[in-house]
Image 1 (tube, rainbow, N blue to C red):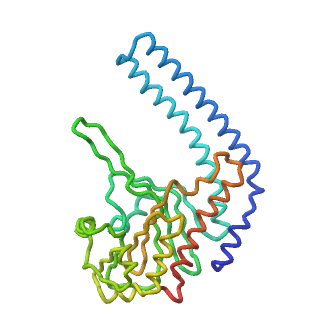
Image 2 (tube, rainbow, N blue to C red):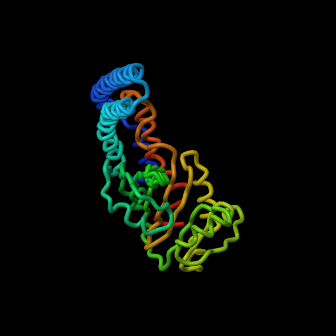
Image 3 (cartoon, rainbow, N blue to C red):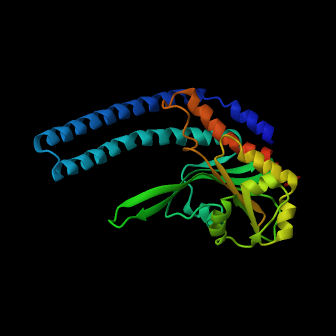
Length: 307
């Protein structure tokens, strides 16, 4: 199935077989939501009543934390229902176009990305939504990652900061490269100095001024880097990085593959509507999957032309 056939099949997805299931899940979600609101109101009323009776005491503070904890438990019930819906829809959508889907990828899926300099350092990670298969005879693997830095102040208080949320993608070029070429966002002179300390190879100077303004390139093989980064390919990278769904793009060539870290806003494959039986849920998931096709067409990653 070529890429045009895959696009057509994806956008012609028939959700009629999921109507009953989605209606049932939406009823379950609404029930969980009403229960969540009741718990929030009841626990809030209790904490407020204690506050009026005792003032702001340690017990009131403890009760407030307890109310938040209990409310979080009931809120997660709604998230569980949404995950159940995704676990039904996403495999069906991917199967329609000959791709495989896994809702919880294994930890080793991050192995190569951890070795490259296209994602920031992190302390915690959360992986989901792994899709793999072939697009126009190109093997690929995509997963969604959320990477978090954990810091503690002098009083021992913990702060968690999301440093990356988006797609990590590997495309196979069916061709081995001798060196390693890494393309990262330009962070100005000072930022580039510190980020370059963790990169292998030397800085590659290129003729394209616009590309130089947007990206920093380092490679262990200067000749190979210029062979890979043709003027047309740099033009395509700039075009792809400007897509509305792409917040930031960084990538690397290594061992016959291209690795891409695509920062996005919000979670993918979660649907575009609160209601689980809203057609927009499937429509948004289709748009998220279609980004894979955008990568292939925008960057022209066909097996015949490579770059």
